[in-house]
Image (cartoon, rainbow, N blue to C red; front, top):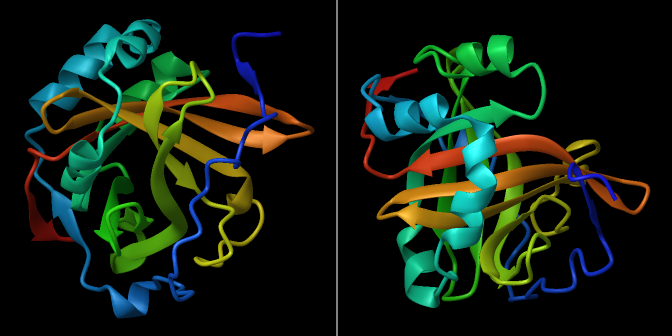
Length: 205
């Protein structure tokens, strides 16, 4: 099996069906969108290290606890690290003006958070909804935050429903994880992403 693919045999089996009312988490209900500060030293350090360092850092991170998960809250600045075309796409994604600026989490109980992605496009958009829970990683079976875009409670459409993300806290407030696209019984790697809770959101999109 390629290092860029993961078997999906237990993908989705850790989903916790908490009594959450379906919501679109639409931009209309969650405006305005603010953008993160351009000063992002920890994300810059990850860009400098490169994706080759991310697998070991993810594996070495502590298993996620309920207390860790509770801190993953509100709008967090994000940086994506592509699985291919790193020299060109990586430099583009590292720019402060890149359109995909973060992910947002809103806890509904101790086990579940509703979330979405934050974009600066079109004056600010919140879209690509997911349900976040703690469960076994498809990478190594250890505890991680699982971001499920297929959950019917958030109403994501295709092809967004095929996205699957994971996160672990590699430093206080700094989260790192792989991003996948589900197809034909496999999770195909799309690269990595990181969230930094220490970066303030301070300007309107």
